[in-house]
Image (cartoon, rainbow, N blue to C red):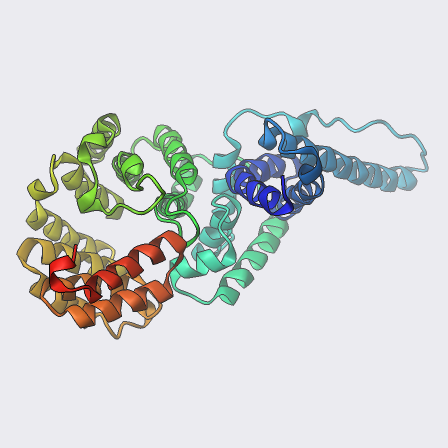
Length: 422
């Protein structure tokens, strides 16, 4: 195995295992900054050893064992130091081996514990989300910045300050209850939502999706729905993730290329996941409160999931649901999605007019889907050369290699003679 091959495989392992690794270590050492450092130490050791020895059969267990050994050494050193200080104060020179059982034990989901810890009320909403995506989502600061359309330096500062704040606050690593659970719930839901979205369409890299991230977000959402069963938005988010997950197998072609929604083979959609999603959505509705952003998005996903063919999609209902979503969670991205739905329901000219109104929106200036959507609508109204320019612009803005290839193909298709266009 070459060094390049080894590095590529180790990077893939790290993407999959880092969140569990940091979560387990955080429960041991009670400090997210130290937990991340220990996990990174284990990664460095893997980078040194695995190119010579090969990737272990269970790389996650190898990394955890390596990191735990370093964590135990750290805990023992700290215990010895603290005990020595105490004994010097008493004039004693005795020492007993520290009991590490409490650090190593514990029942529960470490990842869920860590999400609630990083959504601590001592942190701002922005810091909570950035830190959790960094530690649990495995996203780089650059990827997080792109997701929020803000400078990378801003995200980096938020993460550093958040770690310091949690250490100073002596945050406990448990899932809270009662009022404290309610206080943190909105942040936890936002984090799970962003984790799932990053898995569904990766911000950067050579893969269109990161399915493991989707699966982990969905699993945690299901656990959370048991803990907060009376919260409609918890069920709404689970419904959204269940229905979106039903399409994962059809979102890429044989060579990993993206397959867009209208081109997917709906016979291969996972009907069990769709049924689970519809049931979760019904639970949200039965709680009798107005539908929030996640339940409204789940309702939109349900329209797609219940349509056996693309032609049967109820686009007027989807457009109406986006109108409702824009009222409860206004944002330029929701407005862009609403424009797409209106174009599908009432014609591309109507959608194009709405998209053009978003052209000067500051937060969308580096958002590649704005020119991508505009290119699609321009092509549909016959403005082919303008469409080509928009697809090329979008391709230059995206950092996902698969998406760039798709956009360049669409640009090339616009440049082809009329009879040869797809």
